[in-house]
Amino acid sequence: MRFFPLFLFIFLFTASGLFGESIYKPKLVNSKNGDHHDFPLGVLEATGRLTDGDSEILIMDIGKGGAAQKAGLLAGDRLVLVDGKNPSVFSKKTDTGLEGPQALLGQSLNLKSSALNPVLSLGVRRASEQLTLSVNLPPSLSFNLSNPISCKKRKEFLRGISEHLVDVQEKNGRWKPGVGGDADVYTTAFCGLVLLANNDPSHLSSIKRGADYVKKASISSIDLNDPKKGPKNWQTVANGIFLAEYQLATGDKTYFEELKKCCDLLSKRVTEKGTMGHHYSIPYSGGGLIVINVQAHLAWALAQKCGHPINEKSWRNSLSEVMKSIDPKTGALGYSSRAPWSPDIAARTGAMITALIVAGREKKFAYSLAESLVQLNGRMRHAHAMSSIGLIFGFSGIKLGAFKHYGNIMETWMPYLELSRLPQGSAVYFGGKRNIGGDQYLGISSIGNAMVGMVLASGEDRLFMHGGKSKDWFGISN
Image (tube, rainbow, N blue to C red; front, top):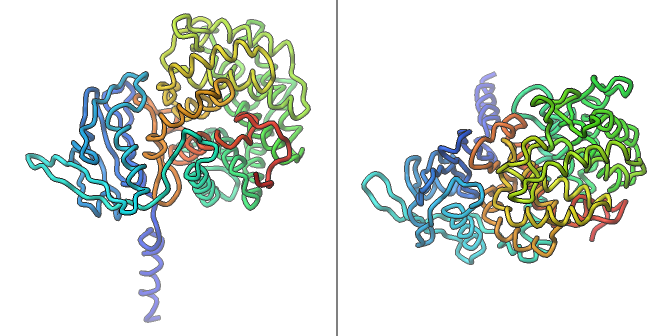
C-alpha cells in the first residue's frame, strides 16, 4: 500500500500529457467581421494575431515546451522581423490571401527547417525593448510544390496527418466534432477521405469504421418514401462523396445501397426550380443554397462511376439553378440565383468544377469556372464560415479544371501548409480572416487535419475528385 501514492502520481502525470508528446492547440478567438485574424505559427507552437494594416504579428499564446517557449518568446510580444526581413502589411481583404507576415513567416520556416542548422532569427518588440531571439526548429524536408505530385515533404505531412487521425478516431468510428448534434457525420466523411488518399492498408479498418458510423448515425434514417425525413443535406452529400470514393478505391460494394440512398434522397430534395436547402425545406424565402447543389452534383457524379445512374431530371434542374448563380463580375458561383454575388466563391465553384469533370459533362462551363477560381484563389479560405470546404473543394477544382496552374497555386499556398504543420507530424486548424464558426461547429482539430490533409491529397492522383481514373487502387503502391 505504501507504493500506491507513487503509482497514482505517475498515472496522473502520464494522463496529463507530461510524459510523451502533447499536441499544441492554438488559442483562436473567432472574429465574424474581421476585426482580427488569429492563426497558428506552425512548428513554433504558438498563436499569432493580425489586424488590418499590421506588419507585426502579435503573439497571443505560447505552447508549453515548444520551440517558441524554449527560445524565450512570450505572449504579448510582437514579431517585427523574420529572418532579418521586415514583413509587408496584412490586409483583411480576402483577395490578398496569405500576403504579408503570414507568407514571410511560412516561407522562412520552410527554408530554415531544412537547413543543416535549423535556426530561425526573430526580431521581437517587447514593450519598449527590441530583442533578437534564435529559435531552434525541428528539422524537416523543404516543401517544393512547383512539382507537388513528387514533393516528399507533402507526402510525409499527409502520412503524419493520417496517422494522427487514426490515433484520435473514437471507438464508434467517428471523429470528434466541436459541438453535439450532427457535425460529427460531416467531419467523419472528410477524415475518411484523407485516410483513403493516404493509401495505407493498415488504416483500412479505421476507414471502414468511419463508413459504418455514417451509415448508422445518418444514412439509416433515410426513408425514400418521405424525403422530409432523414439527415440534413450537408450530411447526405458528404456521406455520398465518401462512400463513392471508398468503393472506387477498394472495389468493396458493402456500402453501395447506402450510397444509392444518399443520392436518391438528394434527387428527391431538388425542387422543380432546381433549388436545394439544408434539409427538405428551402431557406431564404425559397432562394436556396448553391453550396448544397454543387456537392450533390459531385456525389451524383461519383456514384455514377460506382454504377448508380444519375437522375437526369434532378441533375438538369439543379444545374439550371447553378448556372443562374454565376456572378457576372467574377464568373464564379454565388450564394444562389437570387444572390449571385459572393466574396467567398471557392467551395461552390470548386465543387461544381470537380463534379462536372468527374461526370464528363459541361466541360466548357467547368473550365470557365476554373479560370475564375484561379484568378481568385486568394479567397479559398473563405466559404461562409467554413474555411475547410473552401480549401477542400477549391484545390480539387483547380486540380481538375486548371491543372496547368495547380503547381504554381500550391507553391503560393505553401506558407499555409507550413503554418498548419506541427512538429509531431499532424496539422492544426488555420482558418479564414473572418467568421470560422462553421468549422468550430465541426470541430477545429478534426476538420483542421481533414482540410490540410485534403489539400495535400490533391497531389496524389488517387481520389476521383483529385483526378484519379483507376479503380480498385487502395493498397497498391504507385
